[in-house]
Length: 143
Image (cartoon, rainbow, N blue to C red; front, side, top):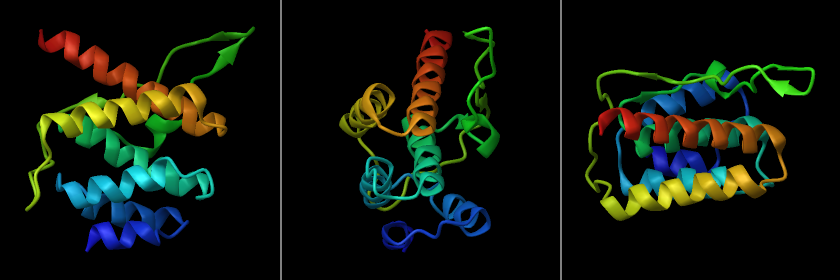
């Protein structure tokens, strides 16, 4: 059901938050839907950012990403003053009927990398960059 709802995702925060909450089940059908939304420049920015929240938790089920984590870091004197980092917690994204594979995890990171380097929307680009940064940081912490 969530995969279907992503195809016509509402562009208001309340309804999007509910859809994000319903999408924490790591399922291939939802992954396909949110990847299509996140990479579609014709979709509203807010909807794309919501899809990025799901890609983040699908990239690492420990990554707890809130709306505020998608805000760009402050820039003072042309220098970025820090980066919003999602917090890490207990995994709360269980596998769905069509669980994700290791290949899906790699495809998620590739999609995020492409968005961070080339998306026309600066906020989407920055959010994807922050998610990639957090994923790499948490990868290193687990080594």
